[in-house]
Length: 171
Image (cartoon, rainbow, N blue to C red):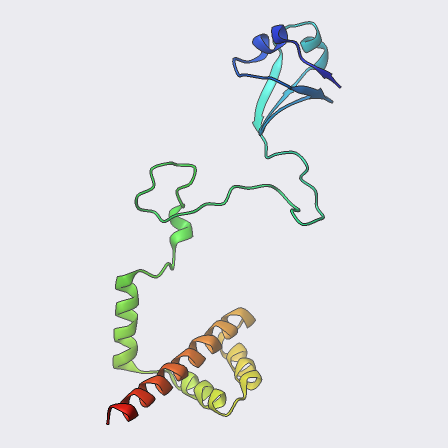
């Protein structure tokens, strides 16, 4: 390992490269890594094969912060102009908006629950959560969908109880 001289850095790129180190044909500068021919850099000539944007070093497969370092994407599709943090449209599929929630609630109110959902609610009323999960898993195909539906149905029961209690107190 050795430090690059200022003369060499000016040949390679116009970036500010203080405290840069060469390690086995790599130059690490923050999150940028440049792959180069070591001998040519030693001779102060510009032979840089390619510039690669890399995550910070120490990407290891074990430990608390294991795996490839990535930047979290935050925020919705509107109001964000920066391309780096804007969410791709594919990630927004199925995102519940105010309008879609209103429409689904209205349809649920008019149409009611499917027969299998009514059966699940009956199972949940008598505290047969595990049986309800097994039944839903058979009907919906996957464990995760079944868990989500069971949670949804138990929330519906809670709301029904609240509505009944509220109606009882009103009279």
